[in-house]
Amino acid sequence: MDQFEIMSELLADRSSWADVKHYPSTVTCRRMLRLADFAAADPARWSSCRMAFEVPELSRPELAVARGVSVRTLQRHLAQQDLSDTGDFTDRELDGECPEWLRTIPVRFDVGRVSRTWRYATALCTFAAAQPERWRVLRLAYECPELSQEELAEVAGVSQPTVCRYLQPVRLVVDESFNDLEVIY
Image (cartoon, rainbow, N blue to C red; front, side):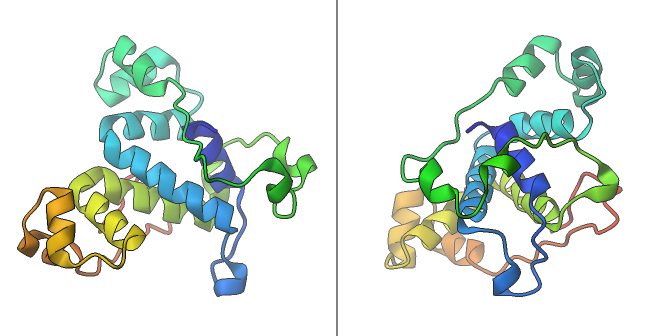
């Protein structure tokens, strides 16, 4: 599964996020986190992929101009990257949450019909791309809750006060009008 397939899945998700019963599937949430990891690993690449996904009518040269990069750099940014997780669900396990007929529906980005999952995912990815070091500390703290702040600092290669600062709650504000590609955090 590449970054564009994950973006299509997030865009197609129609979860309301009203309560736990109406959150996206566990599979979708896991993929959202992997996309944020992708954004943190290469913020410029994330921006190029997001723009190409959201504005598919632009040609590669037009996208390169809009991004302020060369066409060659843009092509490198848009190369598919496998974001599959070896611990991810198999197709058989996924069938209960995403029927085969739904997997074949093509997804076209339409700014007027952007899912709440897409908005939340892009807010998360924008945060991860803007603060990749902080994102990595947050992910490590989430994945290894038994680690102390001192241990997190050692593993992440930052100071303990920095870990303490990074672990402070972050409130992501999603632009509900979706007029701006930037998300305020």
